[in-house]
Structure formats: C-alpha cells, structure tokens
Amino acid sequence: MKKKNNKPDNHNAEEDLLLVNRAIDGDESAFAHLLLRYKDSIYYMILKMVHNKNDAEDLTLEAFGKVFSNLNLYSPQYAFSTWLYRIAKNNCIDFLRKRKGVHFSVEQNNNDELDYNGLHLKSPLPDPEQHLIMKQRGQLLQHFIDKLTPGYKNLIELRYFKDFSYEEIAKTLDLPLGTVKVQLFRVRNRLYELIGEADVKE
Image: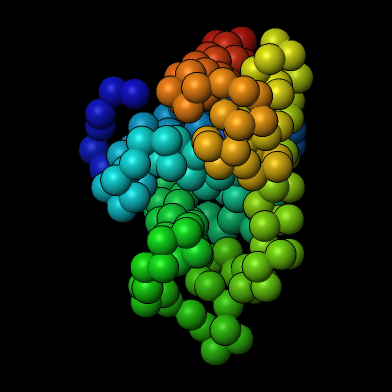
C-alpha cells in the first residue's frame, strides 16, 4: 500500500454521500470506490496502533466489514470519512483489549453502548461478538471470495471465517509460517484487485 495521510480525507463529503446511498441500494462499484478511496489511510492509522502489518491488514478489512454491514445506520450529519475513521479506531481498540490486554478508555453513552459517531452498537459477550465479526467479514468479502481460486478461498475461510491464527493455518495446511504469511498477503492483494476491477466497471 502507498502511504497517505493517517486520517481519511473528508473533502469529498458530498460525493461520499452519493456513493453511500448507491452502496445501500446494492451498487457494487460504489462499495468498491469507497473502500479503495479510504483503505490506505485506514490501514496506516491502524498500523500505528497495532504495530503489526498482518493485523493491520486484517483489521482494515474488518473495519470496512462493520461499516458496510451498517450503512443503513449512517447519518449524513457526519462526514462518511469521520464515521469510518471512528469505527475503525474503536474496532482496533477492541482488538487490542482482547488480544493484547491493553486497556483504553472508550466513549460510552448512558445505555452503555459504544458511540461510533451515530452508530450505536451494544457491547455483546465474547462469543456472540466473535460470531458477529465473522458474519460481518462474510458480508464484506463473500462476493469477491467467490471469484478466488480454491487455494485462496481455503486461506480466507481459515483466517476470516474460522478465525485461525497464522500459526494454526500453517499447522493445518502443513506449510511453513512464512509461506502462510506470504500467501495471505497475496490473497488480500487479489481481493483489492477484484474490488478495484468492480470500481473500474462503474
């Protein structure tokens, strides 16, 4: 990924709103356009928080999964970029809490829900939350996963649907850990290529 500013650009707020409305109506190219516009800035923001490229790649896809699964809850009173940035940041904080034991102070409202700038999501127990995350990943990726080769599909299933670690994938597939990381890097790039192709067809 080419490095950009670490926060999403909101100078195209009106265009973003049009794309959001088209994405809600099922326009694949609008979804692709929004993801490609902001994925680099979201990635580098997350990378600064987790200090791990693989985790940052995963969390970038996951953040967009949450955003696109909840587009119908987006309020135009906020710039889409601001809304996206906030969701990605809080999703990253959740990851750090659960995976690394890091404690952060997160804004909450009186109903004890995370405030994602207009998107209110109740904080569920761990098991339902993991189920929701996997569902969101599926909603974001499934259309493009269907276009992948069988080998790449298997990697995506293990990493994003079964939530395997890199070490678990290596053991399951009897591959060196380095090979797994390289192949996952390639499959993520291929997904972005497919998404980019959808945007070009607009």
